[in-house]
Amino acid sequence: MAGNVAWLNGQEHPNEKMVLWAHNGHVGFGAGSANGKSMGAWLRERYGKQMYVAGFAFRQGRLRAIGMENGTFTALSDYPVPPSPEGSGDAVLSAAGMPLFFLDMASLPPAGPLARWLAEPHLFHNVGANWVIDDPDSNLDPQALSKLYDGLIFVEESHAAHAIEK
Image 1 (cartoon, rainbow, N blue to C red):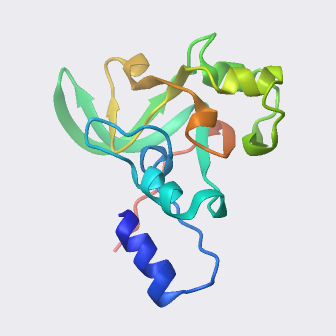
Image 2 (image 1 turned 180 degrees about the vertical axis):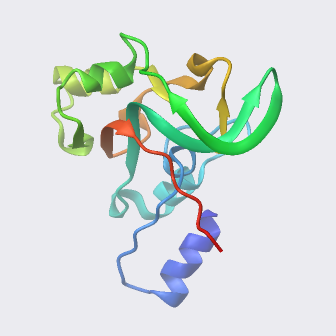
């Protein structure tokens, strides 16, 4: 994925700004997963601070995903997302009382309390193509946001994507 983006930037759109939208796990520039480095980590190595990465967080709502129940995949459908537990990172961000905000983590004073909190792992929704129906809390993973993203888009309540009718 990173190679495709670099090719687009170098060959098709040289010296132009680009916007790339992808799952948090793909764009985050932190340490990679068991599968190796993320696209964001590769691109951060190549472009450094010329690249700005925004992550996405939400507290509750609905989403469209492939369900998983009792370890078995179910249909692509809309699923309810209960409010993340008190004390989770999503709940703490929700306590700001703003249903929608952008936080520029890159510009925070590094020694400040918010920057220190963002550098520590807290539970956040980590939803990709799958949603564990019978254990919603298993869709939460510990993440240190400022080690993954430069900024954060927070939405109190998500809404499921709608299928494109043919």
